Image 1 (cartoon, rainbow, N blue to C red):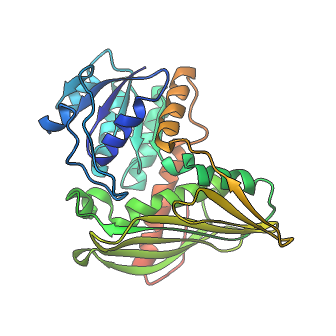
Image 2: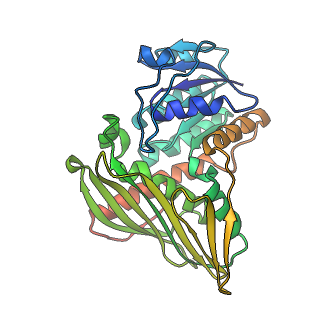
Length: 335
């Protein structure tokens, strides 16, 4: 499968490195408006995980500056869209119209109706569409999913994700382009909840937004019939210095599962008082995500582990959460 990578920012650079370890796929083209990045020099790139860019070998890849030229290339089978968020849906739609398979970085779109329309378009096209909801492939979250299948009723669940407001990319600080800090960050956790329990019945949220000061924070409860409270919280905490972290604690009838950011083990505290430290895979989640997409394309099989309809639903739930925050915690029924 010949892949064209669109965008060479932080996520594009991450994907570029991950593609080198994916069997059955070749990075055949890259697209950017930055000539330095097209040359493979990604050393100026920064991101919220603190790791900087490096120099990559793009000598075997075609170099493109315009989307229309990429999707018109008959040698390209699939595109991997790592452009700014406000360009995700339009680029994905153009690629689908051109008969390409599409992997688009999360979120699939900024608005729910646009995301829904893209899913419908993909269904009519017969091509694979998948959003890069990489949290589904992170080892600690994969292990949690496995454990929850045999741990009885969920009594409570808590997911947190936070970092500094971005100083490395201007477009991320513009909510018209990124959706804002809460939307950009917590759509990971909302999507993961949807993957486990479906779309919540309702949401309500409180928080604070002052983007000029680098603050965009939310504390949201997702309501599911038959489950205890499911809390998703976090956002941006002032610019530059605040470190990135993510974590979860899930209480079930059988045990409490706890994972702190960077932990090499998933901690399991049993109802019987016993403690277990469960081993986690060391696999790169981005490589796992790209490998799964490649396998779906190769088999002509829609991505049931990461279906685009759920990615679209995550956009809608995020919008409901932000709507509730703006209404001082009013409960919003989810569709």
